Length: 212
Image (cartoon, rainbow, N blue to C red; front, side, top):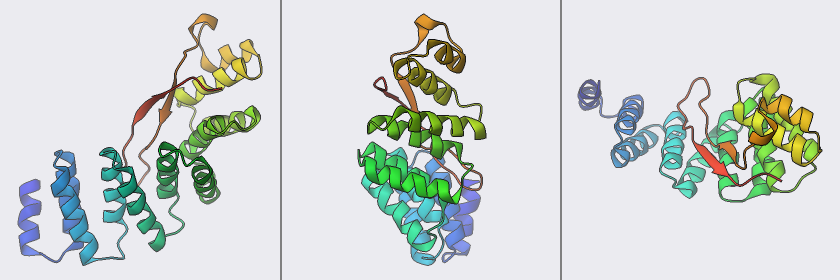
């Protein structure tokens, strides 16, 4: 496939779509510099196309070049301000950068555009914990996340921890986390980027200190 795309690029040197596809292949092969160059070429060929900008943001996030990823995502939003998935990813990056107020603002905007986003609600719950919001707000966010995606073990776990630590309700904690009382973890898993239909995205699992 890579050889076919390189051949297509030689035949159509001014095709932004071909450059984007080539960037995706380089990214899959772990050749980050080549992928970045291909995405940048695609952007130069068609500045209005959001796809290479989105994929460039994902790649920078994978490389933990968060400032570059933020710039790439923000460039997408200048073209398409209502891109909910990009807003969700941008909110996650602001969280990683510890810009919590901005992260909450962006995630709430993402939810406003896509009120059925389990990932956005999940990460909003994490943020409410980080900034010391009332536990009811975090609980509500996790519950909403599980309403739209019941297969989020991290949300089940974090909800259980909140029930136990903040509300003192061990029965609810056990029911939510589906674990024995003595096995409630001292760590909380956090999902930073998740794929959404229609575009590539990076998924990362990070360990955080215990919430609360």
